[in-house]
Structures are given as structure tokens and as C-alpha cells.
Image (tube, rainbow, N blue to C red; front, side, top):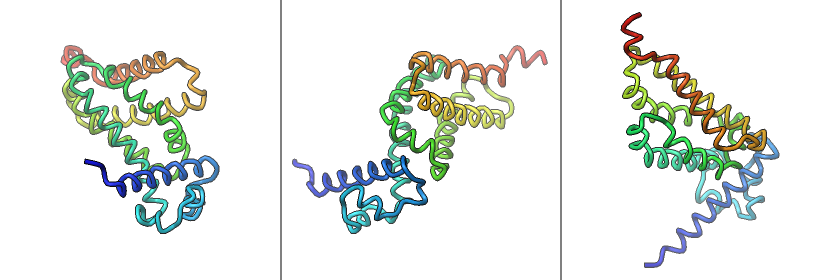
Length: 201
């Protein structure tokens, strides 16, 4: 059965509007961007815009949600292996590949103060997926330490990626992955000593 051409047109329109917003956010702050700016950049009328979004804020949120959904799907696909090997390595590389594939989007969102909600959503994603791993691997006596660790890692990895992009990814991907993994494992080991060490304290 052929897909509804109206659905295809709607998807194309939404994609074009998001691409136009990203291009505009490279040159001006989000607060300065109007619906007319977006539709002019997309060569689209405002009526079409309002068929899909109530305003530029909803458009930005939709763009962020697209990336977050892809990240979550990727994490879900590798979570079982991550649990099995006792390391975050299985999920790190595919997530980084997705970020590289969406480098332009990530760079704009990382540099935009208006997308602080995106940072909070990333932090939530790291916490929701990381908390079961921390519990399984380290059995923390105080659950608040899990929050500290995951918040530290979430903001740290965002900073790591921002710096990597700003340096035009000069560090090889493998070296970045290795550094990120060492940071994660080092932070966890420092916060959650082996059980025999805790028992002797």
C-alpha cells in the first residue's frame, strides 16, 4: 500500500522548518527568531507552519525531542549488552556516532542558552538509564550518591562533547571514547569503593 502523500508532505514540511530554525540559530539568538523568520527561510507560508507547530518554542522542542528519542532508542538497543559486560563501552560508541551524525544540531543546541531544557532532558536521560546500572554494579548504600554521580557525568559529557566540537574533533574518536569511559569508571570507582573496602571502613 502506498503511504499517504499528505503524510510525506507533512514530514517534509516539519523537516524543512527544523532545518531552517537550526540555520537561523547559528546567526542569532532563539529569542530573536520569529515564525516569519522561519517560514521565510523555509520558503513556506505561515499557515503551513501553524498546521504543525503553535510557535517557535514548540518547533525547538520538537527538534530536541527527535534527537532525544533517537538517543533513547540507541541506548535501549545496547542496554542488555552493557549490563552483561559490566561496562558502558557497548553503548558509548553508537551514542557518539549518533551525536557525530547530528553534530550540527548538537552544536547549535549546546551553544544556545534557550535550550537549557535540552540539557535538563539529557540529564534526565542519563539518570533514568544510568541509575539501574549503578544499582546493579555498585549497590550504593546511599541512593543520593547515585544522583551525584549521574549528574556529574551528564554535565561532564556535555562539556566534553562541546569542547570536542569546538576543537573540530581533532582528538580521534577512539581516544575520546577511551577518555570518556575512564572518566565514568574513575568517578564511579572513587565514589563507590569495592564492597570489601567499605566493610573495612
